[in-house]
Length: 402
Image (cartoon, rainbow, N blue to C red; front, side):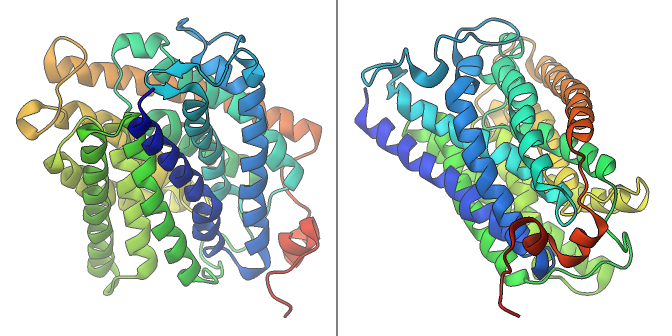
């Protein structure tokens, strides 16, 4: 065991949990109407608890027990075969287990942004549990657990495919199945608290240092560079989004700037351990621009009320970063090179195959999960419950006494 590496990964674990609680809860909570603020926070808390228990019961084992092509084994279920002295690399396996658990928490929590203000709480619980086991776990094993995409040489340092692409695609499907909010797309009330959203975005930004830097699983130059490019990408994307707003609408907004920051963070995630500073800035510029462009078509052309733009920001950003990792990992651009022979073209092909496979599996599995959830209890809350607000109708609470 290396005490320095262990201390860093344990710190990164706390940072990644901080991204969901309270970061994501505040980021999403500020974007909804006040009568639905607590419901969003409840979704994040419940998913954190449920995902942690499922990860202990079987999720961790299915991802990291063995290197079979499609799915792991069950010998690590409940950690019954894992002792305090067992190591993963130079880390206690329990530290590795906890770090990976925080990823299993935030990934289904990202989908919350697609169904806010109109979903049944029972549907959130059932969907999140099934989604974790049937979507996240297999894809994580394929890439991070030694599965068939790992053997193909797919590069996904911290989850552009495993986390953002899967969550983004499923969010779009959930929003489509659920139907839009009343007044969509032109007569929706504005976010009730941009200040909460900004604070949540800041917490996500800080937590992302653990998300990407911790994925090096060691306290060394790779972790330091991952944090560096993560920060640069966030800055470039935030300025890009605000600048495009300024051009299009005549003024930049705080909501646009922080949304751009998150888009840059999502875009750099799969490449963060493989690129240098030039790549970080380039991915931020590309991610900020493309995610900005994609927000409108999802709502206006596809007529899908992905309420908080999970697909446009996380899905599109993660997919773009996964593909561009093959470009900016080039050593002459400050990257580390490629795990496959054949250079950039061969790596880009591997990235495209990995992304296509993950998206195809996500679409198929999510369709089944939504069908099951719809049959067992339905997805959408009643009209009167939605009108009263989910804080009161689902949880009997209000964010403020008035």
